[in-house]
Length: 135
Image 1 (cartoon, rainbow, N blue to C red):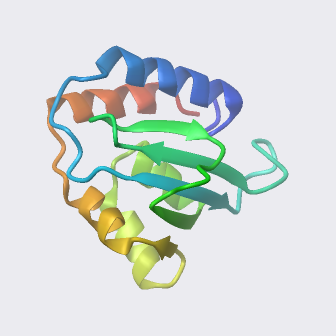
Image 2: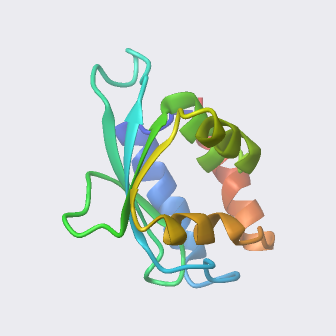
């Protein structure tokens, strides 16, 4: 098991994503989203983590770094990001947003559209696999 968003975790998550590429229901919106993960535990990183999510290929792809031409940006705390991306807990992200702990820049409609997508059996399987690799 690896710490969420560590280099090891990202490599394993990308391998899982590749296994399921092209399967399941495409995301509700096509977008390139930059993520700035704050409040990162010291055993993961001593700085904020820059990550990115791309749905323009018909599935969700997560990586490290930021796009130069992102549609939107999301700044969110580590625990909230982990709850949302690994556990699929949309409620945690919504609560953090409503309490001002999530900041969105750029095209908010694309960010909101991504949250509208339902979890099909492939998305559920991917999240299960991500939970299995996450410490």
